[in-house]
Structures are given as structure tokens and as C-alpha cells.
Length: 125
Image 1: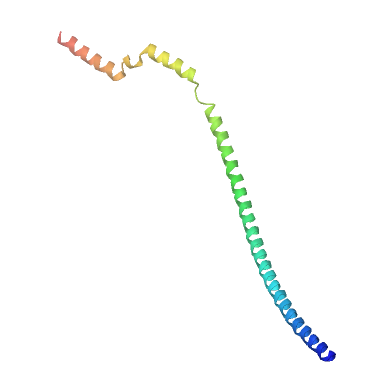
Image 2 (image 1 turned 135 degrees about the vertical axis):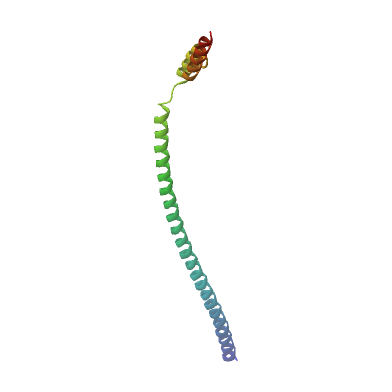
């Protein structure tokens, strides 16, 4: 009987070992598939990241060009502003204009009209 018990134990051990081996193979296959999916996702993310970095580099280059153009425009505006008259100068001119009353001056046409009218009135006397 001991021989039969040993053979039953051996059969049981072989059966459970085969089952365990099958389970381990399935787990190994699942881990391999998951690892493959992770690798594919990493490659896709890497490509996406490289593309985004390229886009950012292009945007930064464009921004640098725009900033350079803005600096040039500001420089031109600054030079032009230095040519404008100061507030004090405008106030001084305003005082002279108000002193002279240029609107009370007569025009050439007004003078000609006055001369014609005076000639007419003298001619009638």
C-alpha cells in the first residue's frame, strides 16, 4: 500500500504542478501583453512629446521674431515722439496767438473789397 500512496501523491503533485505551471504561463503571457501595450503607449507618447516640443520651439521662434519687431516699432515711435513739441512750447505759442488775435486780421480779399467800396463811395461824391 505504501507504493500506491506514493504513486497517488506523485500523481497529485504532478497534476497540481501542471496546473500551477499553466497558471504561471498564463500570467507570464498576460504580463508580456501588458508590457507590449505599455511599450506601444510609451512610443506613442514619445512621438507626441517630440511633436509638441517641435511646436513649442516654432512658437518660441515666432514670438522672438514678433518681440524683435515690437522693439523696432517702439524704437521708431520713441524717435518720432522726440520730434513732437513740448507742452510748454505749445502753451507759449497759444499765448502769442491770443495776444495777436489773428482772427481779427483781414484777408487780401477783404482789403480789396474795402478798397472797391471806398472807390465807389468817393466816386459818387
